Image (cartoon, rainbow, N blue to C red):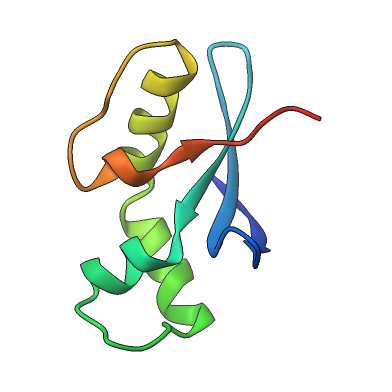
Length: 86
């Protein structure tokens, strides 16, 4: 899984990975990371990248499920969303 930066308008981290023969792109809300790290402030970039790495398998599974048109995924990963193709 690759972190492609933050989308400030969505307050979410853009991520991408390969699944089912294509690239899946999605968003991980910053609020989810804050909740999972039990923070009452914005997390530092290092904290976010470590949390994303530690949870990459679950994030990829949830977004792959969504990309297949299935869902919803289970909490807390039900807050993830697919990126719209432009």
